Length: 455
Ligand SMILES: Cc1cc2nc3c(=O)[nH]c(=O)nc-3n(C[C@H](O)[C@H](O)[C@H](O)COP(=O)(O)OP(=O)(O)OC[C@H]3O[C@@H](n4cnc5c(N)ncnc54)[C@H](O)[C@@H]3O)c2cc1C
Image (cartoon, rainbow, N blue to C red; front, side, top):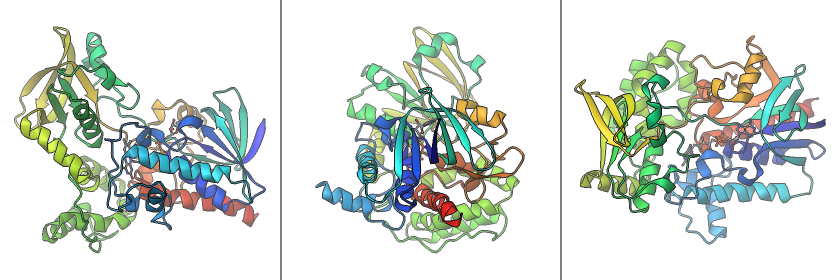
């Protein structure tokens, strides 16, 4: 069995940011093993798309891999001969190329850096021995032991919000359950009618891909609130000082204060952006019942204001709304069944309470990827059965402490096992986007590197 000082499990942005930081901070006599699919290392779900109509929803000037070198992406774009305006919402495949290039640069460097082993595999099981040894079984049959481990395995795609019994098996051939894996767009005919469940950024991506392919059929979008992501404004107004601070009072008071600041600002976005630096601290200051209340009553509103679209993408989408090709409804899906060679859907309208029916050639799940569900990930299921991990109180991800150390079932923190990115959403809430993950990756790499210095 191989032994390394640090194992990084995962192959997306969180893993790439972690590896880059580790190689900058670890002593050169230490070793790192990266367990993930090598060909797509650094891309993960968000940046694997080949479609350059899928754009960043954060401007390039805020998407550097390094919190302390904010111009790194713009400098890379310039070196590639690309326009490098920091306000641009660049294609996601281009951002993926940046991440991979910076990662490859670190991996090619041989001077004065830790040794790196790439395991083109998945971790299928993990056990811990004491506080400073994790042993992994890999999908290529190998075993790996590590003195510290950093789990970066991302979120899990949300399922359709319907019990299995409400989906007619005969309608299943019309379903696309995972837009990132199913390659459903290649099978769509230009006049097909499409029903999309979810009205957020994932839905907009899919609609933009259809538009680029010259799709002519109608697209019906349904979500619980029927809210669409709002556009960024360019140029961006400077963020205001936070209208909400941790501990200022109950959630209702915080929401009132934020709404008032947004209404009084020249551009409401500057009030929302003003809260960004303190969102994690505010979330952690709320007790569990307030966090639940926020998720139930305010999260949909927060999402559309906070996770915004490139303005030209929103304008293109609005054009499709204006022609009537796209329609958006608010309500709850009740049932999917097969009828006349198509899928027939029943949903309850949010505003009238009436049951409505629509037929579609395709039913596309665009409800996103925001949770890390232990029960859906075999590796996590096994670790949970061993008591090595436990879900956070809200069931959003896995429990970690403020240092991102994994909390075991018995409530103790693992000294040398960490989790990063969307897996830790229950603790940090605002930990989905690059500007937040890069800070966490640097901090965790620093802690792992410092352990040895302290020893
Ligand atoms: C469609 C989309 C668009 C986004 N756009 C933006 C944006 O414009 N700006 C922004 O700031 N943020 C954006 N985000 C959010 C953000 O970039 C992601 O949250 C971030 O990339 C998460 O990276 P991750 O590595 O933690 O997870 P993931 O990207 O999910 O990657 C996890 C990786 O781990 C691998 N893995 C899983 N299990 C195992 C295992 N057992 N062993 C080994 N490997 C494993 C997976 O194969 C995958 O490669 C977007 C997210 C999505 C989904």
